[in-house]
Every structure is written in C-alpha cells, then in structure tokens.
Length: 401
Image: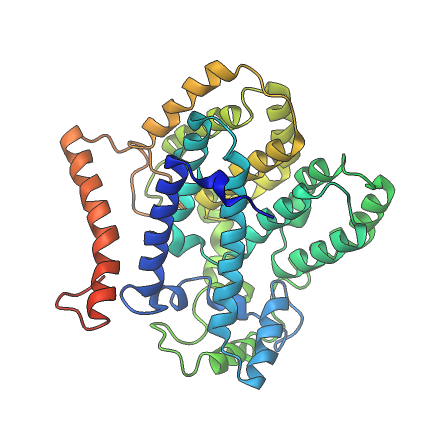
C-alpha cells in the first residue's frame, strides 16, 4: 500500500498543485478534449494492422476492434495515457519523498525534471515511449524477477514503440540483481525473440504495406470527431514510405536546416544535462559513467529524430530510476545538497525545447522585473481558466485559449 502521508511536504504539494491545474487546462481548455484529440500523437494510437503488419500497430488494432462494439477510442487512449502519466509521476514522488528538500526540489524543478513534463503536457501526454518508464518502475519495485511477465511486457513494448533494443543496457542493469534473475534466460529471450522482432519492425515492417487502407481505417474511427486536421493527420504519416519528411529527416538533422537554436546552444543543454545527472546520482561518478555507457545506443536518436527534448527527459529519468532502485550508497551529501540549487535557479534562464524546431530560445536572459511579471502571468493564467470553466461552463464572458 502506498503511504500517502509521505507526500505531505510543501514542495511536493506545490508541485501537485501545478500538475492538477496544468492537467485541467490541457483537458478542458479551450474545449473538452480539444488539445488531446488534435495533438500529433492522438492518431499514432490508431495505427493498426488493417494495411498490413506494421510497427506501433498493436494497440491501434485492439482499439479498431473495440470500436466495433461501440467503445469510444478517445476514452481508451485517454485513460491509458492518464494511467501511464499518473503511474510515473506518483512513483517518482514516492521515490524522492524521503530525500532531503534540496534533492526533492531538484528532481521536480531542474530543467529536465518532472515539471518539464507538466509544462509540456500537450507534447508528452499519452506518448507511448513513456511506457518504458512504466516498465522500469514496475520491475524496479519488484524484489524478485518474473521471467514470463518480463517477456510479455517486453513484447508489448516492442510492438507499440520499437526502441527496446536501444535501452537494453539500462533494462539489464535494473534487473541483474533481482532475485530469480537468470542471465541465460534473459539473453536467450532478447537474442532469439525480442531483438529480432524489434529489428524486423524497424526495417521490413517499418512502413504499412497499404497506407491508404490504414489511413481509411483511421478516418473511419475519427469520422464523428471534431478534428482540425482530417485524413489521418499526424504520427501515422511516419509509417508511410512516401511521406517526404520521413525520407529527408536524417539529412535535415545532419545539416541543421531551419533550426530555431544553433547546435552550439544545444551543446549548453547537454553540458547541464551531464551536471544534472551527476547530481541525480549524488556525485557517484562510477555509477554515472556506467549508465551513460549503457544508454549510449539510445543516443542514436539525436541523429535521426527531431524530439531532442523528449530524448533528454527520458535519459534523465531512466538514470534517476536506475539509481533509485539500485540502492547504491550516496556520496558527499552535504555538497550535493547545495549543488541542487544551481540547476533550479538556472531553470529561470534555460529553456529546453521539446523538439528542434520549437520556437523558444534555449538561453533567455531576462530582467528580474520581466521574470516576476512572467511568473505572475503564468500563475494567473493557470488559475483563471479552471475558475471560468467551473463558474460559467463553455459559454464564458471571455474567450479561452
């Protein structure tokens, strides 16, 4: 049973308040589910096998068949995304609840911390790569290793988001000291089943054989939904072999075409990420170096995909979870306590874009007056939206955006 009393701390309650208000705004403003169903990832959940076996299609196939018995797919996606988000957030809060206040506030409010997820709910909500954090949390909490459950969960992950082979290092590190862990079974499962399936999905089955049929099935599901963009807009295009941004993505990233921030500015983000990882592991250099080596295959995505902020967030919390569940003795607690304050203060001037083309400056040096004014505006907008919706419903005297 979870001990809720552990979370009754000023910093955690403050974070939870921000979380609730941000989540309310995401779901209800400007209209119920408007941002949710018009986000890039909503249609990704609807990728299915109607156009042939394809990566990321398992949940979409289940949703497509459940729709035949009149189960609204919006609520399936919403509650799965909500469950994933709450599972991650609450477990991280419980992991830091017994830490000193400096460390807790650092995990919550450093530039890559939990508040980054809250700030970017519209981007992160119901992202299926977050399932990997759910996976690490679930097995990290277990004292004993269940190979059958591990294998089923692993196949589920691969069929829904095929980055498993790039995270096999951190997964192995998390499991290797569990009771009943059998290295031979683990390797056989990975080499003979999980890895081949993952590679097949990234190569032979990376695109739908008949994208028009797939697209038609998605449009059928969405026929009665008020979408801004029709015709399976969004993530399904990534399984269309003729989709132009897919074919030129690597070239654009390599050349830096139309980036809002330069590569040199992004280098500052990576430097501070390394600093924050050292603070997360409480200055355990050996552990940190091991984790970076284990995660090195995952760095491939920085050369292939645009969502650098998402990769950075996942890297930070994968290392945090492995450290939290490893019971490694911490080092130099007093020094680390004060070091925790630096990234929190830095967060005032450092923005981490969710993707390469997001139009926000990474370094944004502003005056104290402007910072205080922006902070007031942020809290005002956070509170006024829910207040108006609760009081006036969807016919308020002002326009909500």
